[in-house]
Length: 74
Image (cartoon, rainbow, N blue to C red):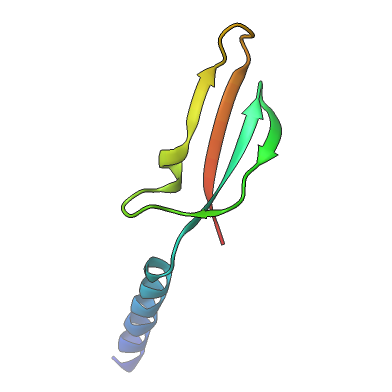
């Protein structure tokens, strides 16, 4: 029983630690699949995820596919 309580306490502590800290995102820009630019990490706005900042479009006139992919950083 003591082991179970200890495991639960550790689980709660880990959950609290991962949800309480500010999450940072780092976005990378790709042109036609080639990495061109990596942005500085930034703090996520309340209630958003890093993937909410992802974008994909084709540039008019030149037809280049532009993608912005964001992921959580440590």
